[in-house]
Structure formats: structure tokens, C-alpha cells
Image 1 (cartoon, rainbow, N blue to C red):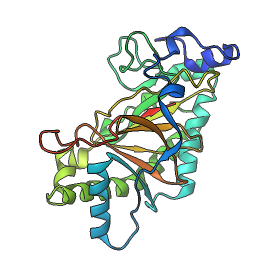
Image 2: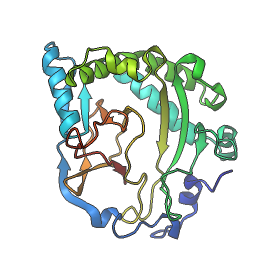
Image 3: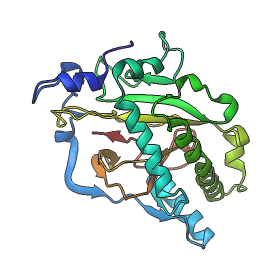
Image 4: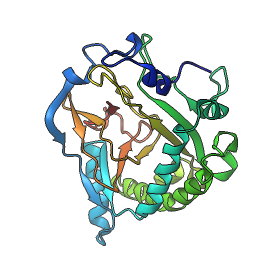
Length: 281
């Protein structure tokens, strides 16, 4: 096992204490660095609007000015999302020895699997999170070794979610292409076309006795082209705007879209987006 799982640490931690490795510096601690009482008004876009030019413009503007936005009426049924979330939650409720069957191989050569360690950790500090990470598309790239057999509906729920996800991905890349003055197919082809890889990461944040001191995921940018976040009913996402950290309020059944490093235009060509460093607390 790469390190002790945070889920186990949380279950054995005394009230009001957490291990030193999880205590962030004062420059990172949420209690100090968060603007309290104000939620960030990240753009919300209804992608079912029949006015496609309007949708394209809104997505382009949100990507350029914010780097993240939420989409509603995206075509993935609520029951599909609930089932998808449910199997992920059920995996982390399994006995520890069963979860370890899907652990990342020793040596860190694979990004896939159940784990705790993140490459973003610096100075020995750790995030208050465990995760399960594996590919879900395209089929030839999938390694089912990392897909849990329990809960029994895990594979079915993932495959059903992916079936609907294709429409969201296609619409996003089309709008982003047109927003950059390209042909509607160009960006999708540039990032893989029909072989575009979908990677799933399920983050599990155990209850933390000192959420004022710890972070689930530290400030970061995503190395991918686009991140599609499926939130649950537990708030925690934050974004940096004009140098300050704000909470991002989830909208029920919305998807949070984050523009990744591969998609961001270099600052020499455009102003960098103002919300490029999300974190969870």
C-alpha cells in the first residue's frame, strides 16, 4: 500500500486534531484564505437553449473570462448521474482489504487505480482525500483491472454515464472551437477525435475534524483539455478570482466545466482566465 489511507486516518483521528502532514501553511489554510459569506457567481449556461449561437458565445465568454462554468439541461438524466454517484460512494464503503484489490501498482508507473498519493503534494504535505482513477473511454484503452467488481452495478453505471457523456463532450468542443474562430470539428480532432480519452477520477473526502486547516485537493490546474466535474450535495469546490479564494455553489444536476491546461491560450496571446486554480476544502 502506497501510504495510509485518509479514510482510515479520519476514522481513528481524535476530535479537533489531524496529523501534521495534513495541516497547510497559513498561506493555504481555508479559514484564513477564503472570502467568507460570498459565493462566486460562476456563469451558469443552459445548453438546451435552441439558440446555438448564444450558447457558443456564452461558453466562449465564460471560458475566456472565468476558465470555468456550470451547465444545466445538458442531457444526462438525473437518475443516470445518481446511479453513477451511488456506485462510486459504495466503492469507498467497501472493506479496506477489498478496496486495496484495485490499488495503484507499486512504483507509481500507472495513474490508474485506488490511491491516496497525489503528484501535487509538496514539502510532505498531503491532501485530505482518497481516490479511484481509471479510463472509461475509448474501449481499447480501458483496463478493467481497475474497475471494481463491487458494487455489482459499477460497470453498468459507468457505461451508461459515458453513453450520455459523449453528447456533452461533443457540444463543448464544438462551442469551444467556434469560440476560437475555428471550424466546429477542429478542437475535438486536435485532442484525439474518436480516440479522445476519458479519464474518471472519483475523489472521496472523509469528514475532517479540522477543515479550517486542511485541504482536500490543493490549488492546481488540470493538465487535460477539459474537466467535467459531477458534484454531489456536499459543497467544497473553491476558485481563485482576482487573488482571493471563494466557494463555488453547486447547482443541483449541473455539471461544472473547467478549462484545462491544454485548452488555455498562452498569456502572450490572451489574458489568462481568472479562475484557473480550483481547490477543494
